[in-house]
Length: 247
Image (cartoon, rainbow, N blue to C red; front, top):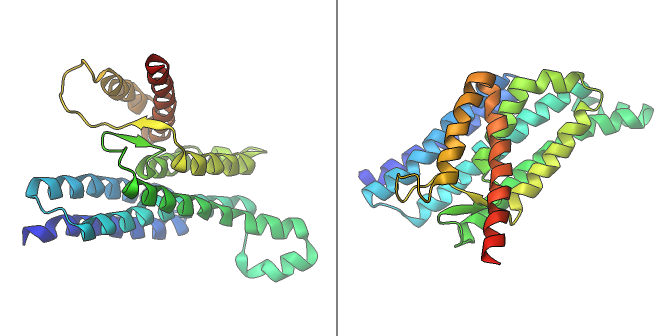
């Protein structure tokens, strides 16, 4: 019986991702964000339960990746897609008319579909993670849960502001392409995994966690996007510092 517990939790992650996609396509961005957060919680506990119960299995590893593609790949892509559709007033069913009468209109209708590049790069990142033995205590490239939380939080907190900006749509596309790059990049990023709970040797991790507290109080739900951006910057800084010390 206990061997089914981790996979059941993973399936809860998958279901959370499906719910997030439905909310996203209906424009319920905040509900989609909380569904992704729920998926991230399930994603954390499925691996922990497998280790505690000693029931890790190859099928569990594959199922975990499939669930992560949905929750942390397709769901944030759906959120961005719907927001870009709102901005462009796109309607896929008007494609033939748009193309015949207005090339610019046709381009604007197609533009939101670029959001699903992020789903493809998330899948690629997860496939690489499964094969990369360097990522036991850290990450190479941006983890998919962090990317998903960034986009969901960004759209919930500042989506309307981006919609009103003259270059808001362009900024979204540029940020999305940057996300795709970070997902499959070779940039080392620290993980919040502790061998010991002391300050020594965990300065970056504890410093990061402590810095997140005021951000949450100041920015509320929008703090998630800022925290993920800060995580990326801090990873790059500490990664370069480690490289220079080794050299």
